[in-house]
Image 1 (tube, rainbow, N blue to C red):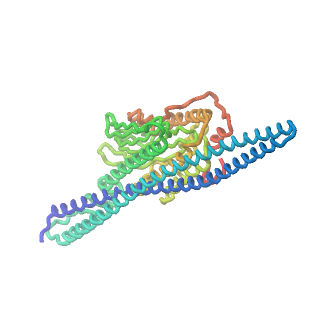
Image 2: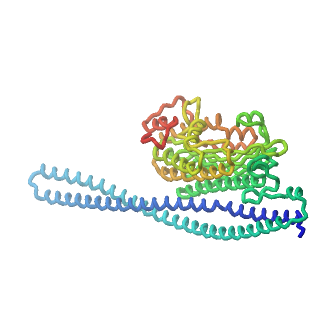
Image 3: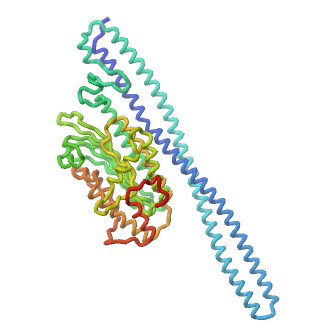
Length: 527
């Protein structure tokens, strides 16, 4: 039997297509992440339902006690009136009248207390009804997504069986080759294991074309997966902001303005979404970018690398809430590649992080934020929360103020020791941002605040602006690569005050200054 190299090449091509199909199906792994987020939301709502139900029971018991007190007061008033009919002097009559007046004041106070409790019970009952409806809707969506996952698993299994058959056919044909010159066949030799499907020769476990430890075709697939994940994170953070706004809106619903933009004189572009003057969020910016261009020598020096062509994709989020008791939050996750003049990959890495900037800090909120990020880091060997927390404290520092921007989080850059494992880490910490921040928003959003507390929030926002304009690498990178200015500066709040030589006026304002230095928050017991 004579088998041509073209026949084997055709089978190999079929094999690659099935592998690509499996890869596409595996990219549907975002669905379980969505299910996980929905389950988390359900648990949050169930916890609220339980808390509110317990609160209603307590308020009903309190209402009963108040009504008993009102009844007792009214009985006293009637008793004093009866005694007035029996007194023999004006002095005794006036004394009873004064007692009746005091009892009536007590009755009015208790009646007001009773009405307050009744109104609170009504509000809690309405909240429970709303939460139950939302829980049912989320459960329906979770069930729908679970069904879809089962269908995708079935399709994936069929594709794997098809791949196995192709592998067997290729192996059989290779064993029967009689007339193909060995040297010619080596030109078409395919490394057929699951992760090494390159069609160029391997040399010391690296692609002979680009010298990266991941074969060229696999690297392109990984880049596509990174872009897919960044788009997914961009979407779920947008949805979380919108859902919180819908739960709290009093007037017309707040919506994101979305701009699709292109990079001038270069390549790629992105999507900028900005929500302003919402019920909860005074400004929320959620950016996605997927760009390429050339690094100038000046910018390359700032990024600790060399001038070259580049590709970069990332998501950048900055959220400025309206309530001073809700902290500002930021996250940025990105992937960067550099190429030589021939288009050969020189290096690639991941970077990013997340940090929290409160105005009136709560220790439990700070610890929740850090604990969630630490749990995400702990899933990955040799990727240390402690190291990235320290890098965050070092990076988000204002030397001219001698203080950190906020209470920190994590920050990492130039992760490239194992790109596939680094990508898994990026996904873990990216997903963790949603769990770390938005429960704090929901917890603190209804806290009452004064005009003075609002003024202090606007003053402290000035520090945020100072850091972003003077020191932030992302802002400087975007400006120097001629990115879209409106998108780059979406991180700035739309209201901010600078007040000359401002001094804290209350103990609560002084709290934040206790937090503006590196601290091991998970070991702290007080601010």
